Length: 317
Ligand SMILES: [Zn+2]
Image (tube, rainbow, N blue to C red; front, side, top):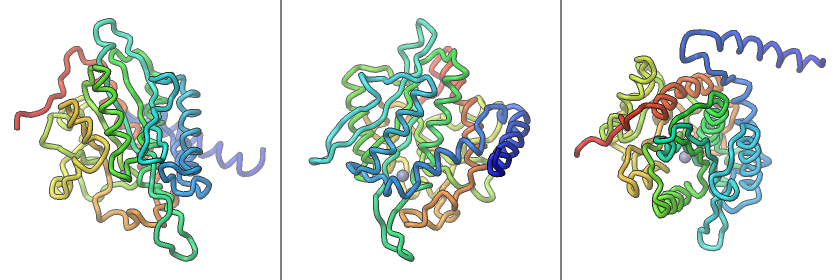
């Protein structure tokens, strides 16, 4: 075994030990797995994953392969949900983990993130590729890793859709398309959770991530209760001031289904200086934080998929 292999093995052992730590840390999402996905999805080879480009095609192939290896089947005939933006062909990637309960399996939870980015940005030191590591390779990795874990755990009563959206940077095009299509099919969608920019930890907060549209539903409250009382999701005033609830792929699902559809994020405008900047690179993210947050999201999603009643509800406004 070459030296690099020994190093990887040590890292891996180290993480399996860490992974046996208390309760929510027990899900096997390692920093090594997170980095493998993150490094590829934000590599120069993918040229900034612009919708309609050859680079995003490589990202799509990687995601399809990931779902397939995790034992998830396509929701439609293939993993791809095709649509057009002008003449550009685009595709969301949609995988299904079927529910196991006769009466609850026709209810769905959707866990999503956009995998497209802006292609090129303003050149800095000869680099013009906007790799979009935080925006939103990080959220994409979250969906892939949660999908893998939930598929392994199995037994979820409700069905779960895992979706990587395209066309987000062009105006939430992928989520608009899919939400209208699913609405047309009459699907019973219970909740939608969107992961966006989860690559850096929040500073000096008593929660791990904020949720957009905090006041619109009891999602954060129930989620924290489901997570054995750990304070996972919280309220960030700037998210409300900047109307972030309407600025990511959760919004079309809220609009079309009138359900709790919200975004989980750890970017608070002060903890990462590379938003839509060519230096939004994997090396500037914190993979240990990502792995920890992803592990901590799993129990809440599991409870959501298994509760007898639909306990997460919009609040009267
Ligand atoms: Zn984004």
